[in-house]
Structures are given as structure tokens and as C-alpha cells.
Image (cartoon, rainbow, N blue to C red):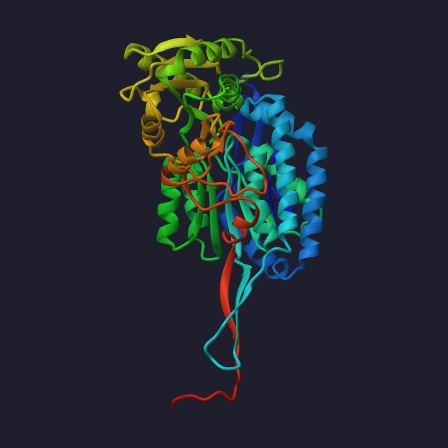
Length: 481
């Protein structure tokens, strides 16, 4: 499949004609061949977005809402096309692809609903006769950088609210799924989004630093949002800081699932299985540390290991729960984490085997801080179980990480769970539910090494608008000189 750039409403080859290939991680066959954008293409995309902004920012909320709502319906109708692309480009399973499309369509609908919620306020002024207002207005051209792991959800999230607020956008697609990301723009253009309001750049992996730096540095780009690893997020943040560009960053995670001694064990097992192994653990909210009170640990681990051992893994086109990891390197890393932990005393209680890019649902019990899997984001289906003595140690271990995106607490005593949740350093916490959960209207984001800013609902309006102070005054007012 050949993937073109989208600039000013038109499909384009790269200015210098270059392309790059994305291979199916499971079959190693060609998944897509995409245009490899150059700096000339960057300039063209920014110019197109800048021109479109002058008109789009003045369109009424009803028109913006109608386009976003129509786009949501078109996206739902293209679920088969999105599913095929996600399987071929990223090794995802069909259920994960279907969930991506469902939630992404809801993100478009939520963004459409927000077009009439971009409100301001009247602020009392000390000047007699003056009307002072706080007014929100579109910021300008927004750069959106989206990842491959939940490609439809996260790329749609990166562009929907900026567009709803009256901005134009440039989506820098992931090198791992250029076709999937490009199809999102097709959905919006088919819905009637004017030329230049959304532009898509695909680039060869080796060109990413140059392309991203040029986009951030361009004076016309006013906002940047990035979802991806903490390592790259730091680079994005530093570059944005250099050019004084506000950035919204949703980065890595090491989400703790804290299971207190009074937890519903069956409920906790269900949440752990889903949160740890959905999409092979390649979700920023994935359960990355299972922290369980030692008084119930034996019973919990036995039930969890039995469930994990039954999860089928293999060809993502088949009837499996775990499909392919994004690359062979990612799969080999799982083996390294297992070997490191078992050599240092961890007990392998489920899984442990790899076949190509497919890794079984794997659980390591009795994990300690000297093991890599304790602190390192696995981003795969290898999960540590950490036994603790009491609530205080559970909280300490939950916070013993550079990350702070999602978390969860299990207890039959909701007041107790609420108190524990209040002390966990994360942007998201679910009580008696899994660490993996997302809804379009919720404020989504993290703290610490998981980034800053919030996607979702009303919280995102502040990220993609400027708050201006505007006054209407008496021209005949008195001045002191």
C-alpha cells in the first residue's frame, strides 16, 4: 500500500521523491510504502496550515461540530480498513483495532461537543465603566506527534480537540503505522474538513529528529502535543522550551496495581489479566507492577498464573489474545527481562516463551528492586509481582518509580482505597478497576516522568487555546497626566 503526504488537501509524494517501507512485524512482508518527507515538505505543510487557520479559526462552532460528528460516523464505517492496516503495520489483534476505532470515533464526537464549551468570563475591573473579559481563542498551527501502539485513538486524540478549538494541525505520523495515521486524515477530509486544516507528514525513521526539530522551530507552529516514550518526550520538551512553545506530553508509564489485604481476589485477578496483557502490554496505562499484600499473595498469584497461562498467543490474524509485539527487538527485550529477573531470584509462574515477535503472557513473582523489570517499563507482556507487608509499603512501592500515569487500588473498603489512591503519585487512579481505561471526556495525562498537560474533554480546551484579557473602556476616562 502506497501512502502519500497530505498537504493543503492534496495527496503528494515527498518533494524529493523518497519513500520508506514499513514491514509487517509478524510476517516480515511489506505492510506499507510511505512518502519520506523532507524539510521542503515541512515548510509546505506549515504554510498550508497557516493559511487554513485564518479561515478555520473564524468558522462557527456548529460548522466545526457538524464536520467532527460526520467524521465520527465515517470512521466507524471504515473499521475494516483500519483493522487491516493496524494488523499489518503493528501486529495488533482485530479486537484491539476495533476498540481503537470505536474510542477514536467517540473522541471526534466529544471534540464536536466541545465546540460550544470554549467559554470565557467577565472579570470585575477596578476601572469605572470598564468591561473586562477573559476570552479563549484558537492558538494557531498545532503540531501533533502520535505513536503506533494505539494508533487510531492517540492520533485522533492529538488532532480532534485542536481542530474543534479552531486550530489547524500537522500530524507527524508514526514511522511504524503511516497508513493507519494517514487514513484518519482521509476520514476528516471526507467529512468536509477544509483543505489545509489537517496536514499529514510521514517520514523515514532516520529523518525523524530533523523533521520534528524543524516543525517545532517554525515560528508559525504555536502548540505541540506528543504521545510516546519518556526518553523522546524529554527531547521534545527541551526543544519546545528552546523555542518557547507550549507542549502537552503524555509519556511512558509503570502503572501499579495495588491489591490490599481485603481485596476481592477474583475482581483483582480479572483487572490484572486485562490491564497487564491487553494489546500485549503495549499500552501506556498497562499494568506494569502488580503489588500485592503478602497475606493474600499466594492465593492471588495462583489464580492469576492460572488465568495468564490460558491466554492464547500467536498470529494476530487468528483467534488469540496476544498478537505480535511491534518488533523483534521488543520481543527479545522480554527475554532479557525474564533472564535478568530469574537469575536474581524471581520465580517464573506463567509464560516465558517467545516465538518470533510473539511472547506469551508472562508473570514473574517475588520481584525485587535489583531486577530490571522492577523499574524499567517493559511495554510488553512480561509483568512483575511484588509482595509487600501492609498498606504503607504498598504505597511506597507504588511511588518508587520515575513514572506517574495510571494506577489502580483494590480494596473492599472504598474509603480506605480512596485514602491510598490520594497518596499514589499518578495522573489517573482507578479503584477496583484495571489500570487500562480511557473515555473521550476524561482528563487524561500524568505526572513526574509521564509528562504534563491533559487530553480529553474540557481539560483539553486550555491546552489548545490562548486565554486573552480584553477590555472595553470609556474613551473619556480620566488619566493622571
